[in-house]
Length: 66
Image 1: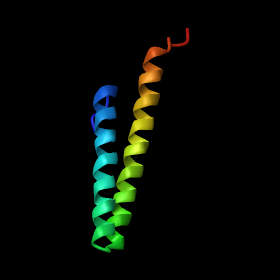
Image 2 (image 1 turned 30 degrees about the vertical axis):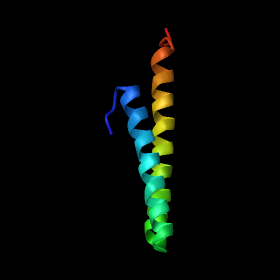
Image 3 (image 1 turned 60 degrees about the vertical axis):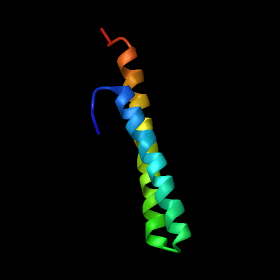
């Protein structure tokens, strides 16, 4: 994941969520618990990446302490 650009981090996090949801659905369709669980983990990873991007972008807007 690219560090520095919050917009790129946001897009990559959202793509992880979408890819994870697709893997989870495929796992459920194929009755493959491991694939479905991996999809849930990928979604969780995407949510964590979005949270990090939000924190980084908020910290960059705050004036540094004097």
